[in-house]
Picture 1 (tube, rainbow, N blue to C red):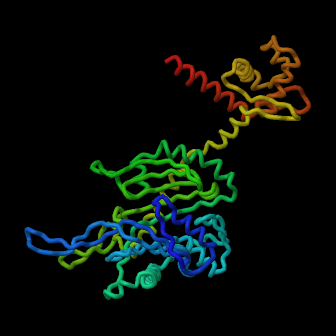
Picture 2 (picture 1 turned 30 degrees about the horizontal axis):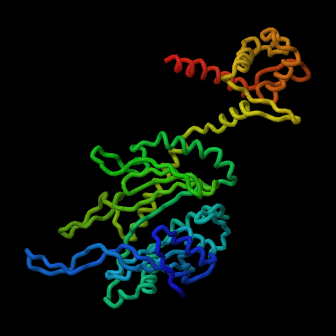
Picture 3 (picture 1 turned 30 degrees about the vertical axis):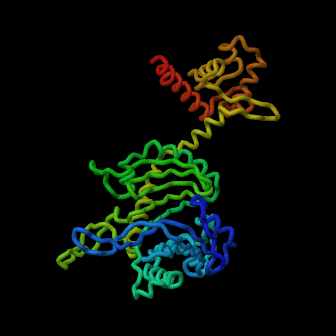
Length: 425
Protein backbone atom coordinates (compact mmCIF):
# COMPACT_ATOMS: atom_id res chain seq x y z
CA UNK A 1 0.00 0.00 0.00
CA UNK A 2 1.34 3.43 -1.00
CA UNK A 3 1.94 6.04 1.71
CA UNK A 4 0.34 9.44 0.93
CA UNK A 5 2.53 12.33 2.12
CA UNK A 6 0.65 15.49 3.13
CA UNK A 7 2.67 18.62 2.46
CA UNK A 8 0.14 21.32 3.40
CA UNK A 9 -1.16 21.74 6.95
CA UNK A 10 -4.42 23.03 5.44
CA UNK A 11 -5.23 19.67 3.84
CA UNK A 12 -8.06 17.72 5.50
CA UNK A 13 -7.01 14.15 6.19
CA UNK A 14 -10.65 12.99 6.32
CA UNK A 15 -11.20 14.20 2.72
CA UNK A 16 -8.14 12.30 1.51
CA UNK A 17 -9.35 9.14 3.27
CA UNK A 18 -12.79 9.43 1.63
CA UNK A 19 -11.11 9.55 -1.79
CA UNK A 20 -9.42 6.20 -1.04
CA UNK A 21 -12.30 4.43 0.72
CA UNK A 22 -15.70 3.24 -0.44
CA UNK A 23 -17.10 3.24 3.10
CA UNK A 24 -17.31 -0.56 3.36
CA UNK A 25 -13.78 -1.95 3.02
CA UNK A 26 -12.55 -3.72 6.17
CA UNK A 27 -9.00 -3.60 7.56
CA UNK A 28 -6.38 -0.99 6.73
CA UNK A 29 -7.83 1.74 4.49
CA UNK A 30 -4.81 3.94 3.79
CA UNK A 31 -1.63 5.37 5.35
CA UNK A 32 -0.99 9.11 5.48
CA UNK A 33 2.29 10.76 6.41
CA UNK A 34 2.92 14.28 7.68
CA UNK A 35 5.65 16.29 9.41
CA UNK A 36 4.24 17.28 12.80
CA UNK A 37 5.32 18.29 16.27
CA UNK A 38 6.08 15.67 18.90
CA UNK A 39 7.70 15.16 22.28
CA UNK A 40 11.33 14.04 22.22
CA UNK A 41 14.35 13.74 24.51
CA UNK A 42 17.85 15.17 24.16
CA UNK A 43 21.04 14.77 26.21
CA UNK A 44 21.52 17.55 28.73
CA UNK A 45 24.39 18.39 31.06
CA UNK A 46 23.73 20.42 34.21
CA UNK A 47 26.88 22.46 34.76
CA UNK A 48 25.94 23.30 38.35
CA UNK A 49 25.01 19.79 39.49
CA UNK A 50 27.59 18.22 37.14
CA UNK A 51 25.06 15.63 35.99
CA UNK A 52 24.13 14.44 32.53
CA UNK A 53 20.59 13.23 31.79
CA UNK A 54 17.84 13.16 29.15
CA UNK A 55 15.68 16.28 29.00
CA UNK A 56 12.15 16.33 27.54
CA UNK A 57 11.60 18.89 24.79
CA UNK A 58 9.54 19.50 21.66
CA UNK A 59 10.52 18.78 18.09
CA UNK A 60 9.21 17.73 14.67
CA UNK A 61 9.31 14.31 13.10
CA UNK A 62 7.43 12.30 10.46
CA UNK A 63 4.13 10.87 11.68
CA UNK A 64 2.12 8.06 10.12
CA UNK A 65 -1.66 7.92 10.24
CA UNK A 66 -3.01 4.38 9.89
CA UNK A 67 -6.70 4.67 8.97
CA UNK A 68 -8.67 1.48 9.51
CA UNK A 69 -12.17 0.04 9.54
CA UNK A 70 -12.35 -2.70 12.15
CA UNK A 71 -15.32 -5.10 12.41
CA UNK A 72 -15.45 -4.60 16.21
CA UNK A 73 -14.79 -0.87 16.73
CA UNK A 74 -15.49 0.60 13.30
CA UNK A 75 -13.66 3.48 11.63
CA UNK A 76 -10.67 5.17 13.27
CA UNK A 77 -6.96 5.86 13.03
CA UNK A 78 -3.70 5.42 14.93
CA UNK A 79 -1.21 8.30 14.82
CA UNK A 80 2.36 6.96 15.13
CA UNK A 81 5.41 9.24 15.55
CA UNK A 82 8.78 7.98 14.31
CA UNK A 83 10.76 9.26 17.30
CA UNK A 84 11.04 7.76 20.76
CA UNK A 85 9.07 7.55 23.09
CA UNK A 86 6.50 6.76 20.31
CA UNK A 87 3.50 8.38 21.98
CA UNK A 88 0.48 7.01 20.11
CA UNK A 89 -2.77 8.82 19.50
CA UNK A 90 -5.89 6.78 18.69
CA UNK A 91 -9.18 8.18 17.37
CA UNK A 92 -12.41 6.18 17.71
CA UNK A 93 -16.04 7.16 17.17
CA UNK A 94 -18.70 5.63 19.40
CA UNK A 95 -21.39 6.04 16.74
CA UNK A 96 -19.47 3.72 14.41
CA UNK A 97 -19.05 1.16 17.19
CA UNK A 98 -22.76 1.31 18.02
CA UNK A 99 -23.68 0.86 14.33
CA UNK A 100 -21.71 -2.40 14.29
CA UNK A 101 -23.38 -3.57 17.49
CA UNK A 102 -26.82 -2.84 16.01
CA UNK A 103 -25.90 -4.90 12.94
CA UNK A 104 -24.93 -7.83 15.15
CA UNK A 105 -28.26 -7.62 16.99
CA UNK A 106 -30.21 -7.33 13.73
CA UNK A 107 -31.62 -3.89 14.61
CA UNK A 108 -32.31 -1.72 11.56
CA UNK A 109 -30.91 1.83 11.49
CA UNK A 110 -29.90 4.62 9.13
CA UNK A 111 -27.22 7.29 9.54
CA UNK A 112 -26.42 10.78 8.33
CA UNK A 113 -22.63 11.12 8.59
CA UNK A 114 -21.95 10.07 12.22
CA UNK A 115 -25.51 10.53 13.51
CA UNK A 116 -28.43 8.12 13.64
CA UNK A 117 -31.53 9.59 12.03
CA UNK A 118 -33.50 6.39 12.61
CA UNK A 119 -33.18 3.27 14.79
CA UNK A 120 -35.80 0.53 14.96
CA UNK A 121 -35.41 0.29 18.75
CA UNK A 122 -34.01 3.49 20.31
CA UNK A 123 -34.30 2.26 23.91
CA UNK A 124 -32.32 -0.89 23.20
CA UNK A 125 -29.70 1.09 21.28
CA UNK A 126 -29.29 3.51 24.21
CA UNK A 127 -28.86 0.60 26.62
CA UNK A 128 -26.17 -0.87 24.36
CA UNK A 129 -24.36 2.50 24.23
CA UNK A 130 -24.45 2.81 28.04
CA UNK A 131 -22.95 -0.69 28.43
CA UNK A 132 -19.75 0.07 26.51
CA UNK A 133 -17.03 -2.16 28.02
CA UNK A 134 -13.87 -0.22 28.87
CA UNK A 135 -11.96 -3.48 29.46
CA UNK A 136 -12.70 -4.62 25.91
CA UNK A 137 -11.70 -1.18 24.65
CA UNK A 138 -8.41 -1.44 26.56
CA UNK A 139 -7.65 -4.80 24.94
CA UNK A 140 -8.45 -3.37 21.52
CA UNK A 141 -6.11 -0.42 22.06
CA UNK A 142 -3.30 -2.81 23.03
CA UNK A 143 -4.03 -4.83 19.89
CA UNK A 144 -3.82 -1.67 17.74
CA UNK A 145 -0.50 -0.67 19.31
CA UNK A 146 0.97 -4.11 18.63
CA UNK A 147 -0.28 -4.00 15.06
CA UNK A 148 0.82 -0.49 14.04
CA UNK A 149 3.68 0.28 16.44
CA UNK A 150 5.23 -3.01 17.67
CA UNK A 151 8.55 -1.31 18.48
CA UNK A 152 7.52 -0.86 22.14
CA UNK A 153 7.77 -4.63 22.55
CA UNK A 154 11.54 -4.29 22.09
CA UNK A 155 11.63 -2.34 25.37
CA UNK A 156 9.36 -4.86 27.14
CA UNK A 157 6.86 -2.15 28.13
CA UNK A 158 3.16 -1.57 27.65
CA UNK A 159 1.29 1.58 26.80
CA UNK A 160 -0.61 3.51 29.46
CA UNK A 161 -3.79 4.74 27.77
CA UNK A 162 -5.00 8.20 28.80
CA UNK A 163 -7.79 10.48 27.59
CA UNK A 164 -6.85 13.36 25.31
CA UNK A 165 -10.34 14.48 24.27
CA UNK A 166 -13.85 13.16 24.87
CA UNK A 167 -17.07 14.14 23.11
CA UNK A 168 -20.46 13.00 24.40
CA UNK A 169 -23.54 13.87 22.37
CA UNK A 170 -27.28 13.61 22.95
CA UNK A 171 -29.31 13.60 19.73
CA UNK A 172 -32.97 14.57 19.43
CA UNK A 173 -34.21 13.15 16.12
CA UNK A 174 -37.10 14.84 14.31
CA UNK A 175 -39.27 12.92 11.87
CA UNK A 176 -39.60 15.93 9.59
CA UNK A 177 -36.97 18.60 8.89
CA UNK A 178 -39.68 21.28 8.95
CA UNK A 179 -40.44 20.53 12.62
CA UNK A 180 -36.87 21.34 13.71
CA UNK A 181 -36.59 24.33 11.38
CA UNK A 182 -39.66 25.91 13.02
CA UNK A 183 -38.10 26.06 16.49
CA UNK A 184 -34.35 26.17 15.82
CA UNK A 185 -34.13 29.89 15.01
CA UNK A 186 -35.83 30.69 18.32
CA UNK A 187 -33.53 28.32 20.24
CA UNK A 188 -30.36 29.76 18.69
CA UNK A 189 -31.28 33.44 19.06
CA UNK A 190 -32.46 32.98 22.67
CA UNK A 191 -29.37 30.97 23.66
CA UNK A 192 -27.04 33.59 22.17
CA UNK A 193 -28.60 36.43 24.18
CA UNK A 194 -29.57 34.71 27.43
CA UNK A 195 -26.80 32.22 28.27
CA UNK A 196 -24.39 33.89 30.72
CA UNK A 197 -21.16 32.56 32.29
CA UNK A 198 -23.06 31.39 35.38
CA UNK A 199 -25.42 29.40 33.14
CA UNK A 200 -22.51 27.73 31.35
CA UNK A 201 -20.98 26.67 34.68
CA UNK A 202 -24.33 25.28 35.87
CA UNK A 203 -24.75 23.28 32.64
CA UNK A 204 -21.43 21.60 33.39
CA UNK A 205 -22.33 20.96 37.03
CA UNK A 206 -19.74 23.46 38.28
CA UNK A 207 -19.57 26.83 40.02
CA UNK A 208 -18.06 30.02 38.64
CA UNK A 209 -15.83 31.38 41.40
CA UNK A 210 -14.69 34.99 41.58
CA UNK A 211 -11.03 34.04 41.10
CA UNK A 212 -11.72 32.00 37.93
CA UNK A 213 -9.42 33.26 35.12
CA UNK A 214 -10.22 30.83 32.29
CA UNK A 215 -12.16 31.52 29.11
CA UNK A 216 -15.96 31.68 29.43
CA UNK A 217 -18.25 32.74 26.61
CA UNK A 218 -20.46 31.96 23.61
CA UNK A 219 -19.60 31.45 19.98
CA UNK A 220 -21.92 31.24 16.95
CA UNK A 221 -20.81 29.60 13.73
CA UNK A 222 -22.42 28.49 10.45
CA UNK A 223 -21.11 25.23 8.99
CA UNK A 224 -22.04 22.96 6.11
CA UNK A 225 -23.74 20.52 8.50
CA UNK A 226 -25.76 23.30 10.14
CA UNK A 227 -25.66 26.35 12.44
CA UNK A 228 -23.90 25.86 15.75
CA UNK A 229 -23.71 27.71 19.04
CA UNK A 230 -20.86 26.88 21.40
CA UNK A 231 -20.56 27.73 25.11
CA UNK A 232 -17.02 27.52 26.50
CA UNK A 233 -15.67 27.26 30.03
CA UNK A 234 -11.94 26.58 30.15
CA UNK A 235 -11.15 23.28 28.45
CA UNK A 236 -14.80 22.19 28.35
CA UNK A 237 -17.46 23.29 25.88
CA UNK A 238 -21.10 22.47 25.27
CA UNK A 239 -22.51 22.87 21.75
CA UNK A 240 -25.89 22.85 20.09
CA UNK A 241 -26.35 22.45 16.36
CA UNK A 242 -28.89 21.21 13.83
CA UNK A 243 -27.22 18.33 12.06
CA UNK A 244 -28.50 18.27 8.48
CA UNK A 245 -31.60 20.17 9.69
CA UNK A 246 -33.07 16.95 11.07
CA UNK A 247 -31.16 16.15 14.26
CA UNK A 248 -30.81 18.54 17.20
CA UNK A 249 -27.47 17.61 18.75
CA UNK A 250 -26.31 18.69 22.20
CA UNK A 251 -22.63 17.83 22.66
CA UNK A 252 -20.23 18.30 25.56
CA UNK A 253 -16.51 18.23 24.64
CA UNK A 254 -13.68 17.90 27.17
CA UNK A 255 -9.99 18.52 26.44
CA UNK A 256 -8.93 18.12 30.06
CA UNK A 257 -11.10 15.67 32.00
CA UNK A 258 -9.59 16.74 35.34
CA UNK A 259 -11.79 19.86 35.17
CA UNK A 260 -14.63 17.55 36.25
CA UNK A 261 -14.88 16.00 39.72
CA UNK A 262 -16.63 12.90 41.01
CA UNK A 263 -16.83 10.76 44.14
CA UNK A 264 -13.99 8.20 44.05
CA UNK A 265 -11.24 6.47 46.01
CA UNK A 266 -8.26 8.78 46.62
CA UNK A 267 -4.84 7.38 47.50
CA UNK A 268 -2.78 9.47 49.94
CA UNK A 269 1.01 9.72 50.18
CA UNK A 270 1.09 7.78 53.43
CA UNK A 271 -0.54 4.80 51.68
CA UNK A 272 -4.04 5.31 53.11
CA UNK A 273 -7.15 5.76 51.01
CA UNK A 274 -10.41 7.64 51.44
CA UNK A 275 -13.63 8.24 49.52
CA UNK A 276 -14.20 11.87 48.51
CA UNK A 277 -14.84 14.30 45.67
CA UNK A 278 -11.76 14.49 43.47
CA UNK A 279 -10.76 15.39 39.93
CA UNK A 280 -11.41 12.79 37.25
CA UNK A 281 -8.28 10.81 36.37
CA UNK A 282 -7.03 10.92 32.79
CA UNK A 283 -6.84 7.15 32.25
CA UNK A 284 -9.37 5.46 29.96
CA UNK A 285 -11.22 3.83 32.89
CA UNK A 286 -12.48 7.31 33.73
CA UNK A 287 -14.74 7.02 30.68
CA UNK A 288 -17.31 5.25 32.86
CA UNK A 289 -17.92 8.18 35.28
CA UNK A 290 -17.52 10.62 32.37
CA UNK A 291 -20.52 9.06 30.62
CA UNK A 292 -22.67 10.12 33.58
CA UNK A 293 -21.05 13.53 34.03
CA UNK A 294 -21.20 14.58 30.38
CA UNK A 295 -24.63 13.05 29.89
CA UNK A 296 -25.89 15.10 32.85
CA UNK A 297 -24.41 18.26 31.27
CA UNK A 298 -26.32 17.59 28.07
CA UNK A 299 -29.57 16.98 29.96
CA UNK A 300 -29.22 20.23 31.94
CA UNK A 301 -28.78 22.11 28.68
CA UNK A 302 -31.83 20.37 27.17
CA UNK A 303 -33.86 21.38 30.25
CA UNK A 304 -32.73 24.98 29.71
CA UNK A 305 -33.74 25.15 26.05
CA UNK A 306 -37.00 23.31 26.85
CA UNK A 307 -37.99 26.27 29.03
CA UNK A 308 -37.54 28.72 26.14
CA UNK A 309 -40.91 30.03 25.03
CA UNK A 310 -41.81 28.91 21.54
CA UNK A 311 -42.91 31.94 19.51
CA UNK A 312 -43.17 29.93 16.31
CA UNK A 313 -46.96 30.09 16.28
CA UNK A 314 -46.91 33.86 16.72
CA UNK A 315 -44.46 34.30 13.88
CA UNK A 316 -46.59 32.14 11.61
CA UNK A 317 -49.71 34.15 12.44
CA UNK A 318 -47.88 37.44 11.91
CA UNK A 319 -46.63 36.27 8.54
CA UNK A 320 -50.14 35.14 7.69
CA UNK A 321 -51.65 38.61 8.04
CA UNK A 322 -48.69 40.72 6.87
CA UNK A 323 -47.51 38.72 3.87
CA UNK A 324 -49.32 39.14 0.52
CA UNK A 325 -51.74 36.41 -0.53
CA UNK A 326 -52.98 35.20 -3.90
CA UNK A 327 -56.53 33.92 -4.44
CA UNK A 328 -58.14 33.22 -7.81
CA UNK A 329 -55.10 34.77 -9.54
CA UNK A 330 -55.58 38.02 -7.65
CA UNK A 331 -53.05 39.56 -5.26
CA UNK A 332 -54.06 40.83 -1.81
CA UNK A 333 -51.38 42.73 0.10
CA UNK A 334 -50.80 42.08 3.79
CA UNK A 335 -51.55 44.44 6.64
CA UNK A 336 -48.95 47.16 7.24
CA UNK A 337 -49.16 48.50 10.79
CA UNK A 338 -47.26 51.65 9.75
CA UNK A 339 -49.31 52.57 6.70
CA UNK A 340 -51.82 55.39 7.24
CA UNK A 341 -54.76 53.70 5.46
CA UNK A 342 -54.22 50.36 7.19
CA UNK A 343 -53.91 52.02 10.63
CA UNK A 344 -57.21 53.86 10.13
CA UNK A 345 -58.88 50.63 9.00
CA UNK A 346 -57.78 48.52 11.97
CA UNK A 347 -58.73 51.28 14.41
CA UNK A 348 -62.26 51.19 13.00
CA UNK A 349 -62.42 47.39 13.29
CA UNK A 350 -61.50 47.51 16.99
CA UNK A 351 -64.48 49.71 17.96
CA UNK A 352 -66.47 48.28 20.86
CA UNK A 353 -69.83 48.04 19.11
CA UNK A 354 -68.29 46.02 16.27
CA UNK A 355 -66.78 43.57 18.74
CA UNK A 356 -70.21 42.78 20.20
CA UNK A 357 -72.59 43.01 17.25
CA UNK A 358 -70.24 42.63 14.31
CA UNK A 359 -70.22 45.04 11.37
CA UNK A 360 -71.45 45.42 7.79
CA UNK A 361 -70.12 47.30 4.80
CA UNK A 362 -72.41 50.23 5.57
CA UNK A 363 -70.88 50.49 9.07
CA UNK A 364 -67.44 50.90 7.55
CA UNK A 365 -68.89 53.50 5.18
CA UNK A 366 -69.90 55.71 8.15
CA UNK A 367 -66.23 56.03 9.17
CA UNK A 368 -64.75 56.05 5.66
CA UNK A 369 -67.13 58.25 3.68
CA UNK A 370 -64.52 58.94 0.99
CA UNK A 371 -64.55 55.26 -0.03
CA UNK A 372 -67.00 53.90 -2.57
CA UNK A 373 -69.07 50.75 -2.02
CA UNK A 374 -66.85 48.76 -4.40
CA UNK A 375 -63.69 49.92 -2.55
CA UNK A 376 -65.14 48.82 0.80
CA UNK A 377 -66.13 45.48 -0.74
CA UNK A 378 -62.53 44.93 -1.90
CA UNK A 379 -61.22 45.85 1.56
CA UNK A 380 -63.51 43.31 3.23
CA UNK A 381 -62.47 40.66 0.72
CA UNK A 382 -58.80 41.40 1.46
CA UNK A 383 -59.38 41.09 5.22
CA UNK A 384 -61.17 37.75 4.73
CA UNK A 385 -58.37 36.36 2.57
CA UNK A 386 -55.82 37.38 5.22
CA UNK A 387 -57.89 35.66 7.93
CA UNK A 388 -58.51 38.85 9.92
CA UNK A 389 -62.32 38.80 9.62
CA UNK A 390 -64.93 36.09 9.02
CA UNK A 391 -68.41 36.22 7.53
CA UNK A 392 -71.47 35.05 9.46
CA UNK A 393 -73.48 32.41 7.57
CA UNK A 394 -75.43 33.76 4.59
CA UNK A 395 -75.62 37.27 6.06
CA UNK A 396 -73.62 40.38 5.26
CA UNK A 397 -72.27 40.64 8.82
CA UNK A 398 -68.58 40.22 9.75
CA UNK A 399 -66.63 39.63 12.95
CA UNK A 400 -62.93 39.83 13.77
CA UNK A 401 -61.29 36.40 14.03
CA UNK A 402 -59.29 35.41 17.11
CA UNK A 403 -56.09 35.92 15.12
CA UNK A 404 -57.37 39.27 13.84
CA UNK A 405 -58.16 40.54 17.33
CA UNK A 406 -54.79 39.46 18.74
CA UNK A 407 -52.76 40.86 15.85
CA UNK A 408 -54.56 44.22 15.67
CA UNK A 409 -54.51 44.76 19.45
CA UNK A 410 -50.80 43.85 19.68
CA UNK A 411 -49.91 46.03 16.69
CA UNK A 412 -51.64 49.09 18.14
CA UNK A 413 -50.06 48.53 21.58
CA UNK A 414 -46.61 48.24 20.03
CA UNK A 415 -47.07 51.49 18.14
CA UNK A 416 -48.68 53.59 20.89
CA UNK A 417 -46.87 52.24 23.96
CA UNK A 418 -43.38 51.44 22.62
CA UNK A 419 -42.53 53.03 19.27
CA UNK A 420 -44.07 56.53 19.64
CA UNK A 421 -42.77 57.14 23.25
CA UNK A 422 -39.31 55.86 22.21
CA UNK A 423 -39.17 58.28 19.28
CA UNK A 424 -40.28 61.15 21.52
CA UNK A 425 -37.47 60.37 23.96
